[in-house]
Length: 323
Image (tube, rainbow, N blue to C red; front, side, top):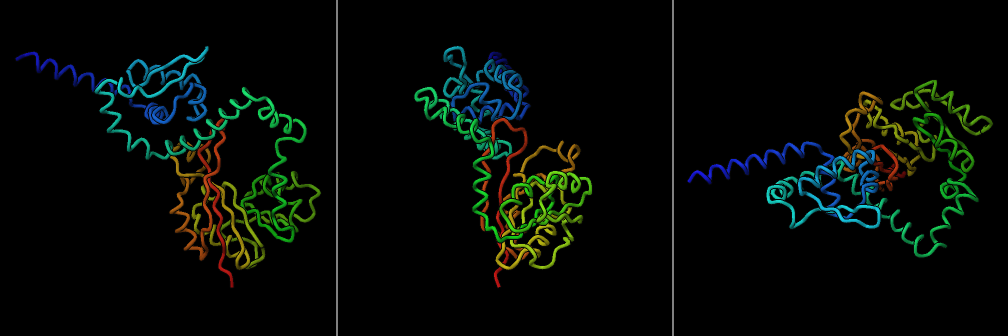
């Protein structure tokens, strides 16, 4: 009769030990990824945006706990969820935690980055089996540079447009737009940013620089054909007011493009970089559009670049009402 309590206490101890071992969100995110795909440590590190040594440390703990299994492929190792071989306590915990883990904002961005990592893998595979396809990107990059495609696609923009670059910063967007549109109006609150933008765009006569807050733009109603706000809204105390002003400054039926952060939980950004908002959901953007008297006509998650360290991004296009 004494064996049952001892066995129960042992199982309770094992369960608590497993919970203690899984106190880091990164380990749960690893399980969510390895349930989808068999991956190498480098692929996991790029997907999670952590150093490879960090990914290896967490994988070791998961491997020792029986959560995952490893197989060798040449000199490399590939990992996947242990599945039926997973210890009962671990499997029970994973089944309980899976819905919350997969719904977490970081896990959602992991899935987006994983798609990019797997796309890179497919390119590598084509390069291995057929050198022509694999080498062409490098040849084109060597001949014509990294920015060929985005610069060429800008010619789809109407050359008669006036575009307002709101929160222009040091002028990256204005620099790209200036050669292909009639006029660019670059607005920023910070004098230092505008000075840097002026240096970048020295000689571009059809670019105007205006210092002002985005909640009170120095533009007439409908002065611009389109406006762009790149990585600006999450710094704004009242992003709704900034979007409303942008829509006012664009003529009826004009476009406002917002590029900003998807929802995330990196609270250190608030203290370190002055972020006032932890990203924006599509639902929140639709509410902001209604308040601005505009319509959200397109919302797109931008493809993730595996070697970047920031949260995921979206591009949202708003259209002002036509007369």
